[in-house]
Image 1 (cartoon, rainbow, N blue to C red):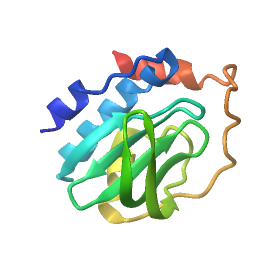
Image 2 (image 1 turned 120 degrees about the vertical axis):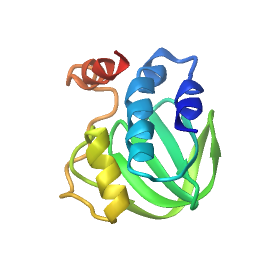
Image 3 (image 1 turned 30 degrees about the vertical axis):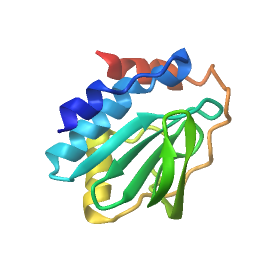
Image 4 (image 1 turned 180 degrees about the horizontal axis):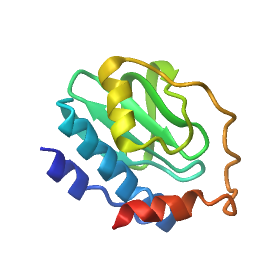
Length: 135
């Protein structure tokens, strides 16, 4: 199922679409870990973010400024900001390695918090790092 989820990740805004490879790798890592997936999408711009919804109703929301947050999915779809409750920041940086993300989700652990990234800071290398996941 994860291959079809990853294949459907598309967004018309180039900066949002730049997250496609990273989110697809994250979907694959979660699936390899045996975590049941429901759906995923790339979300609106400013901040750039994306959502993976697990079969148990957990929302994993990635944002360019705060990294990954785990919560209970309420609503959302591509083009609409995801709403969730009981959000817990996974910490560890904006771009967790996808396998490490899957480990944190599987174990319920979190990493040390970090200072949020400034939105729109195109000179910090984030989008260069994201491009590395598109290979």
